[in-house]
Length: 132
Image 1 (tube, rainbow, N blue to C red):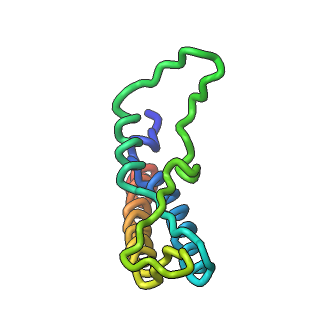
Image 2: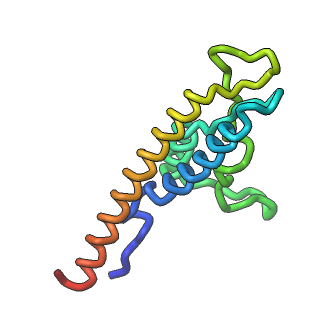
């Protein structure tokens, strides 16, 4: 019997990739906190997750040979949203450093949780392969 990693791991491997990309976006926001006119951006993790879950529940039909069979990568700009600041600055920068750092920390904790979950899944799979 073959092991299906997609069914064994669920969406946690994709969640790790998306969390890593979100960390890059948030770090970029923090790095540009003093850049005049810089617009803070973020990935709407919930909508991307919903999109992945919806895509898993139905088959997509390819009606043309030019259609791509893969899903759109989450790092494309479609998932990046501009953030509306609570307190806009005079120079047009929308980065609020404390908010960005809080989001970055929350994202890091969630990344670690998914990583820990995947690690335990792999440990269980290794034990099953070894017959333990």
